[in-house]
Amino acid sequence: MTKMRLFRLVAAAVLLAACATTAAAQEEAPWFGSYYMPGNLVFTLGGEASFSNGFGVRAIPGFEVMVAKARPGNAFALDFGAGVRGLAGFHSYTLNYGYSVFAVAPMLSAHLGFRGLRLPGSEYLERLDLFTALGPSYSLFNTTGTWGTTRPRAGFGIASASGLNFFLTDSLAVTVSATYFGRFGYRYSGAFGSGIGILYKIGPMEELAERDPIVMPRVERPSFTGPIMYSTFVSLYWSTIAMGGFWYDEETFEERQGVRMLHRYQEGRDTTEMEYVRALLRTNPDGTKWWRFVYDADEALAFEALVDEDYSLLRMRYLDPGTERVEEFVPDDPRVWQQAAIEARREQDSLAPTRLRTERITVGAGTFDTDVYTYEENGYAFTWWVAENVPGRVVQLEGRSSEADEIYGELLEVLSGVRSPWGEPR
Image (cartoon, rainbow, N blue to C red):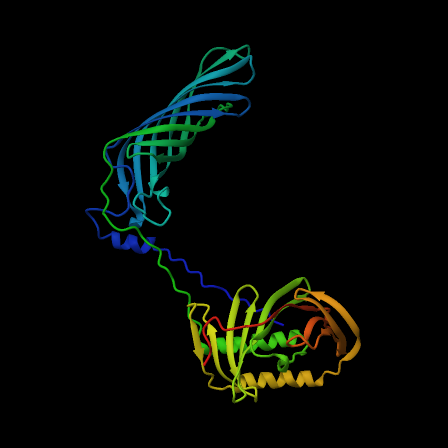
């Protein structure tokens, strides 16, 4: 038994590169940029904490001048700056000793901006500025308390800073950063710290080209053709008959009468559970019958079929899962259905079940007085609970294969007054 699942079409289009190519021609007013222009003055002030071998607090003032801008692929903006950052802090190892430090570092910086991106949900990303900076540093230390000497220690090292700025206005941003002020040949606690701060920029932003926001296209789900749905219907309908052990009786259905059944199939640790509805909508004077069939596993598939007395499927209606429209299909070869029906009838005729007992059972549809039948052959065993007053007669079933696969089915509901939700079939 093969479990049939219907997957919806999920499409995602990444349009940024294509739009960037178009924007490359917009020399005078680019589509993508940042909050900076060359010549901008940027002032920062941050407060940080360090937790390495004790606890420290420090202030990080900074200043830079934006000197250059680049747009790789015109997909985002890179801004470069030159400036200086300072450090004034105190670190305590215990309540009795620690050190104070003052440092200064000229730095080159790079900023990555996404202003003008205009993708759905990108309003926060457009306000973001990612940055990193690096340069040499000079630090002056002074130990305090009862530990070590109190003479100052000074030396050169390296400093770095990285983090993000989130612009609240065109000039004011909140900063989250981490900085490192090290000293060559001398390791000390508290060299690394992180914290928050503010940024204030003086100078204009660049002008960006006006355009509508990029809208991700709505991709229509594909229409399922008649032949595909016809083959699907044949497979689903007769597979439910096979899972029921080929015990079915269409002659017990009256017009507008139907059943809703549950089938559960377990193969090893995998379990497939589905419901289906089978109902007789109408019997025509020429003996043809309109049947309605709804198969619901992960997603419902609905069909209506006109079948003649020779088991040929003459016409079929179905709800297209792609367009959600009701379509009609006339098979080129109605014998596809006929051959499947004949095989199912042959399997049913070969059954010689043994009647075991009568039993009153309760299932989803209610309580029924049933006759219990069993049949076993070639490693397969089925037990059915059947009632003459039930369309199709099957109230409950259990099955098992030689590979220990198990099947369970039960009647969930007896339906009456069933009509097509798509209008009366012709």
